[in-house]
Image (cartoon, rainbow, N blue to C red; front, side, top):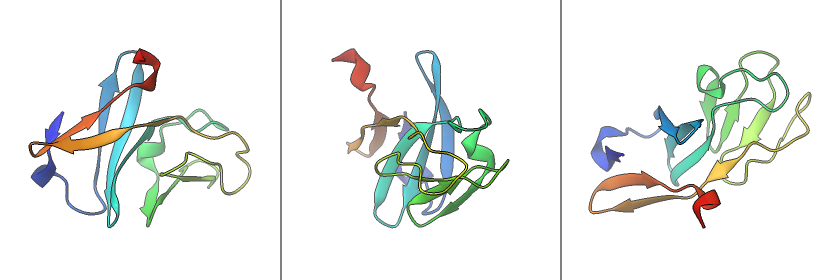
Length: 100
């Protein structure tokens, strides 16, 4: 997908994965990937703020855990879909668990 060195800590990229847009984020603790869609407002999460291991929806401020996808604050109650990420040979790769 992209070189590990292309991601600064606190940065992200939006990438297509089949029929889904995914936000790939690099934090102090590693890489995470979540669907680029707030489960409450159906707006792109990539337009929101990143802090530690959370992403905040820009529309109503709902926060989601990047690691688990859990909705952490209202108005969202439904988790966002997460995707496994690995770094292999210096490349960041996202896998869709639906392929299994």
